[in-house]
Image (cartoon, rainbow, N blue to C red; front, side):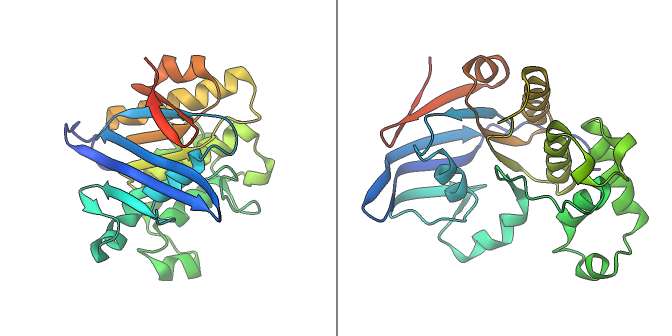
Length: 233
């Protein structure tokens, strides 16, 4: 895998006065956020408050009704944004793994858009396999590379998803409630790995429900309430 990235001071993500509604229900009411490249932030809030919506807007999966959104220096409304989507890893609550496939295969498919032939045939280069194994090693799962993910624990599945983001060479990782339904020790381990990606220059935004974990491992913590985002001091 590529060498650790140099931390940057520029803004990897900028949201200004973003509004979004589902039908007549306005979820976001002027959300503004600036995230330095290579930092790790957590977003908290009650269920249905719009946390997932914010992540999807940053990933380019949803288009806000109003406001300005710039990710990795590009306006998400411009044509060029589609060219950088591969640098954004979105880990949904469902994780999105192929249950019947191995942990290694689930990591390798992160580069499927670059190597469609390898994805179809299953013939991956030695370099890709080496990089995928290194990503699994970083999250402590190199010993289970050949294990089908449906035989892994919830925490191990989350680590596979993080390894996939590393293998993808993502500059931004968006994790939607990555520790829900996990025991405390496992949850802390996952949060520690996620937040630690910032030391490699990766910008991390994670939706969390545990304030203690958020304050312990993330640079900044925000709460989304009544459609507005504010930083917790």
